[in-house]
Every structure is written in C-alpha cells, then in structure tokens.
Image 1 (cartoon, rainbow, N blue to C red):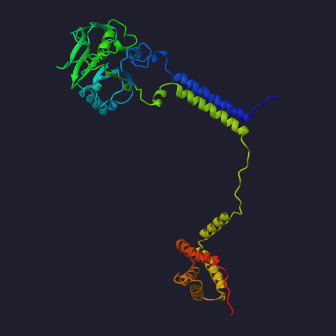
Image 2 (tube, rainbow, N blue to C red):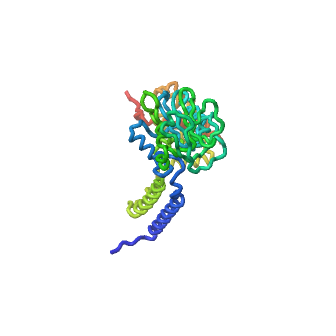
Image 3 (cartoon, rainbow, N blue to C red):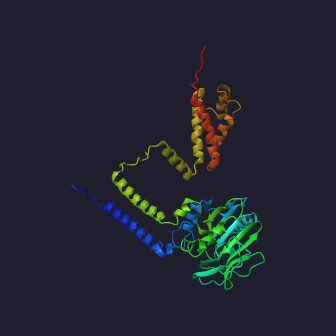
Length: 396
C-alpha cells in the first residue's frame, strides 16, 4: 500500500523546497563570473594569469625559505635582519599602527619588495603621480648596473603607477622615456625595492623577456649570510589567518546554509510524524501553593493585613493555653509570663509580642511590612510549640 503524504507535511515540503530554490538563485546571482574570478592582484593562491602561484611554487621548488604571511605587520619579526617581505599590489590600506610597524621593520634591517600604486599608503617617502599610465605591455631597460639588474638588462611589464620626483636616496634601476619602472632606496639598515607593476612575478609575465632574472635578483640576498627568509604577504589582499576569513570568500557558506535549511525541514517533518504524543500535566487546583497564593491575594486586595496578624495571634494563644493548661481567657501578660517560666522563653519578648499583635489585630489599616514582621515572629513561636511534647501536670 503506497504511503500518502499529509496535507500539512506537503505544505512544509513545498515551503522548504521554495526556500532552497531561492537560496540557489541568490547564490548564482551573487557568485562572481568567470572574468571576475581572474582577480587583478597577484595572489599566491591564484593560478589565473594575474596570479602569482607559479612564482611562489618556483621559490619553494628552488628551496627558498618562503611562506605566506597572513598576519598584520605588527606581528613581523622583531629582529628583521635577514627577512624579505613581498607586498605584491596590496590593495587594503594599512592602519597608522601598521605603517609604523612596516617602517620599523625596514629601519631595523628588513627588506621589502612592493609593487603597484599603493606604495604611498605604506611608505611616506614614496611619490606616486596621480595620473595612471597606460597599462599595456611596455619594455624597460636597466639604467645602471646593480645586483638587481644583473642578467636582466631588458624587462617587460604592465605599469600601474608612475613615479614622481626622486630624492637623493632613491635610485631608478629601470626606465624608458623618462618613465621610471623600478626604484630602490635604503631606509635605516633596510631597503625598499619598488616595481611599477607586478608583471615579473605573475603567472603570465614571469616567463617573458628577462622578467624571471629580475624577480630572482630582487629576492636574492647578495651576501654570505644565506638567503632571505621570504614572507609573501597575503594580509593586504584580504587573506586573514582565520578559517572563517577564507571560507567567507567562497560559496561554501551558502552551501552550508542551504544544507542547514534542508536538514531543519526534514527534522521538523520527521519529528511531527514520529515524536511521542503526550498531554502536558496540568497544575492541580488543590495545590497548597495555589491556596496560599489565592489567600494572600485576597488579603492584599482587601487591605486586611490586620486579619493575617489576628489569625496568627489567636493560633499562638490557643496553643499556649493548651500547652500550659491555662484558661483560654487568660491575659497576654499571664500567658507570656507562664511561657517564660515554664517553656524556657525568658528574655525572648513573647509577652510584648502578644500585646503588640493584639493591638495590631484591631487596627483598621496596618502596613504590610509591619504585619509581615509580626506574623513571622508569631509563627516562629508557634513552630517552637509544635516541636514540644504536650505538657502534663505532675501529681504527688
């Protein structure tokens, strides 16, 4: 016999299916197109033409000590001598604290290779013209011999910025028709090397002309102290060192959300059909606490605080009379004196309490605070009487 689907379950499934279809549509609309995936910054994670995965893998295969850097500049080594930081077209601006950390890194002996027009945001002594050059492939030639230009007299790149005025410490290493493409200068014990564009280290440009030689010369350490410890920055590409920062840039979050909605719909449908059926237990109207709440509410609405004192007062007198074998019409003073002598309540103020309670029970208006205080004291003595054995006169 085929299993049918109840109308309510069919409605839930239709709603869940509609939500799933909506999420899929939004994912398709918001996901980047094929052209957008080819980002315009040289990330070491990208195998696209503008990426830098080939250069990063090449350094790893050549046994250069290279690793991706996804932490802020404030976490750079405190002893930067022997370290090289690659900032390939950073597009996120640094904070003032991060600028100071980078300046301290270079002044302490660290070296920086930076490309693109964002250098003025990182180092204040860099002068970049506002006018953007034509980003077509252009040839540049070495202007003077140096370790950077060795074996790379002719390079080709796509300039993304034009250098302005050079100061006395800045040396142009490549230029063509007054257009400077590579600049080097010393800051403190370190050095900064700037390229007008990242072409020599991108997947599409590293193999063109003598770009590879320029790239290897730029990251080489021309001393007998061994190679640089290379830190390839991805922090200013938006790549943070947490898992969520990476996942948030992919469609995985949308997929997890869709699966979560589908799982909730399935669990809700299954639980409605398979969960045990039970009737919640009702609170009995004979509950002692309900009686107390009801009685207290009546006293409160009637403003009969003195009545509550009267009930506790009469109860205590009745118990004392029976316990002490005294007449029920005995005065409060007589009951109190007998209780102090025969029950050991000396100096406990039972006589005064009985007299106060008797006076309060006659008042038409009594404050709730005073009534509560009297009732608590009367009930305390009542509780003490309940714990005692009945008193019996001894006859000789």
